[in-house]
Length: 318
Image (cartoon, rainbow, N blue to C red; front, side, top):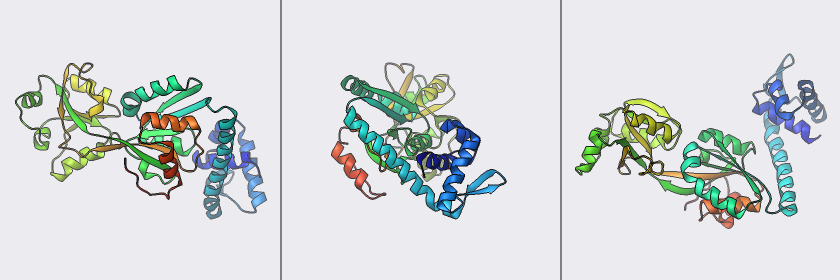
């Protein structure tokens, strides 16, 4: 048994049993991948994969039982390498952060800047994606830290720690009727908001679920004309007069968004919690803890280590 065999099994599952893609990921040949899998099956005395001819079609029941063990063995091997690197060069290495666009654009920059100044020997890599993609990058070991509002807390393989709460705001062109209401001191209501076409985030992004829930509770339909993954796109189309925008309050900048008026909507929609995620059981190097504390000061190394040691499903508050 060797790690290449274990990697071949893991990647076969990750890549939907497509051995051509597996070979590309592992920088080897398709026959080589097939051989590694067969040799492991022969050694264990079981078939890990179901087959249709030479094509893999799924996991057998024994394969489904073995997969978590394969994942743990490979994670511990990665932990061993990380631990060695920690003591060989404590302040040198690579830190990979996965985040949604809103977090990468509005929440992370100051922390990234400050960390880069204090850890000049650490190379930072930033990947952007959907909350689900952020979670998958963490679970696969391709990212050390993930930052998102939705999804992270729903994965048992991740430790998701609360960072900060935020609310939504409504944005409109300065000549819009809602902007005039605000200037006159007229409170914004969902019923009033529902009279206009809406531009906001796609489902699964940046607190969209709280927006949908608020309208549903009052039996109001959303006149959705456009949904997007990030606030910059939403603001662009609001400026064009296509509709009223609902975005994260942190994404509105009074100077940069001079053509738009922002209307506080915290009384309309539930507040949202941005979470920082790490892979459960992963070995985190000292500079990873340092970045976490730079981004969210309550998340000290002690707090993170306690969360890593806790049972899955344990809730943590800030």
